[in-house]
Length: 383
Image (tube, rainbow, N blue to C red; front, side):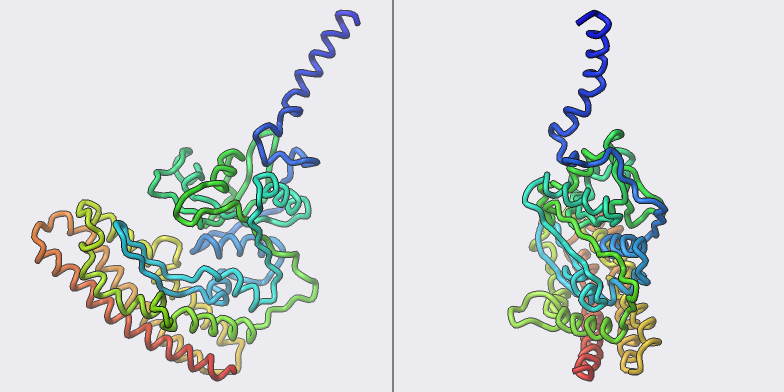
């Protein structure tokens, strides 16, 4: 082999080396994967809640006639859960919104928790090649576009955040996703996206879960009666006090006393401002659409009532409006405490602040009890 051929061979090898090694330690580089898969003509919509927004953008791309309130309301999403601890957590929605909505809307939705990293990316690539957006469950801490190009702080770790994947460029090492707060596609390095999917966070680890909806059948039409009937039945189950005493109105009934006794389990006083700020956020700001998802469910009932013959929803809408007011009242008390508690030195003065919030929680319990009664009336009429 002459020198010219040797130089040419070396040049070819240098050019091929990145492709030969491209899959080394990169599970997103799967066999027979094209270098670039970008879904065309993507237009994304900003949302109120991460999961419903991710579902919305995936379904809108495929032509489904849905909006976000239909997903949240039709998914029977509202509920209540309070977890005591050093840093208490207040949850206001169920964990099966996606499945309930899919059942009521007759939309074929699939979710997978793959066994290996390679399987997780193989499934994603296959769906993109079919022209289907993929909803990814991720730890939001590892999405640098949310934190000025860096990973978020450890306290932002949360593995039940949903985004929708619309494209991958292996040559650039980039992925392109939609996310709740953004009305444009966001770019993220594939290695960061893989880290977000594989996170071992203790706060709902994402387990590389991905989900998708099948393309819309040509004759698809939403059945409002089925969607609302399914949703109301789920809402009743979410709020109904359980025999085990866990969740729903049982937790809400106990909330006033848990607020008054908060320093018995949230024992680090220096955390109290952050705790009450977070409790306010769980109700109003952290992807709930405001008032702990009740606003979106109310809007769903108002939209659905125009497509139904029954008038039973009028009482439920009234109950929801009263509940929304009570939720705003409670979140307002939490916000006030978060701003004042740092400068309140005596236990009696702090107890006075807690008591005001507890009294508002008692009002909220009564309003949510009335809401449950209205929902049960609808549910019974549909049997």
